Image: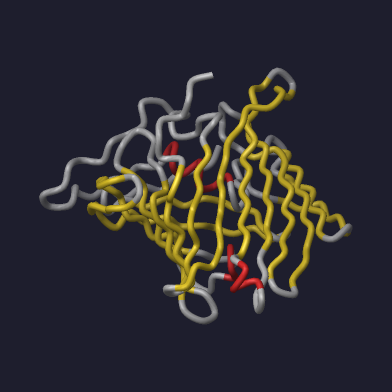
Length: 252
């Protein structure tokens, strides 16, 4: 199992205590669809969409598919086009990835990745641009998309706490650290919400070739919605702001 190393702290002065999810799966609901405006400095850089859907069970295990897309705006496309698509199939009980497909289209970089995770064996078959490799990994390893959902569902959000996740990305194994920095209020399309600010220490590049750590603000409620994300890039920074999907997920 994936080990969490937690350092406990006290809630920020004057803030409400962080709200834990009512169950391990409450922030990972089929039907959730989150849409983000991406901004590069003050310029609209594009749109990202993160969605969750139920899919056919595998060996009688319930499964979820995480789909994330990111597309640059017409202006940004002129000099740095981005059109990424990531699909991750995770076990709905353990929230561990079983399979992932990643089409990366960033500037001149064009790569196709496929991963098959054999969690019980601690192995992953990674195929990059048609070249396959059989690699070792830690049992309980996440992929570059599932790690966000896993953190939303399971980690402590008390300021001062930190978690370490094993992540496989681009045929390499990394340790991702998530630190809980504090609690603050954010205003946006969702209204005004109390949010928990996380610092994600990034050992690899993500959307728009981020060059450093990423900060994520999660709503301090049962859904733990990523309301805002900020990352430094080669020049300036990129901000992802939630603009749709904060409404209740419709019951199925």
